[in-house]
Image 1 (cartoon, rainbow, N blue to C red):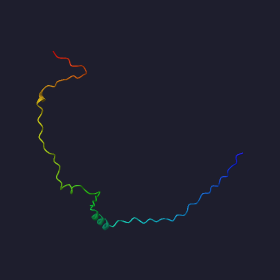
Image 2: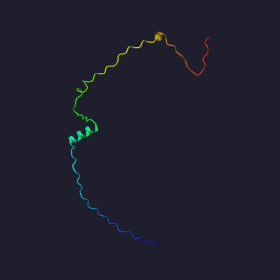
Image 3: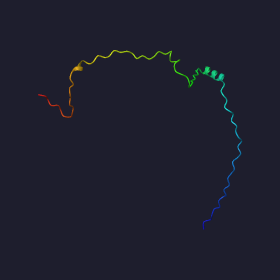
Image 4: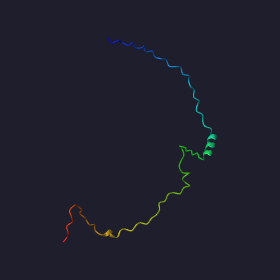
Length: 96
């Protein structure tokens, strides 16, 4: 009743041969080129070393000394006894 539609045969297509691309080995930048580029751009090159010790650069800076300030005098009512105050939603009753 239903006619079968013939399916084409599956044939894998072999990949096309690709010429091996040889990328040039990364070359080290010329230090003279770096220095010239830095001078032209106005930048300064800063390099750090992992084994460097702290001391020579920080000796030129003075040590931090906090400002000396006088203590504020204590409040005048410091020796008075504390007063307990009740708070709540009820209106205060007058004391007789």
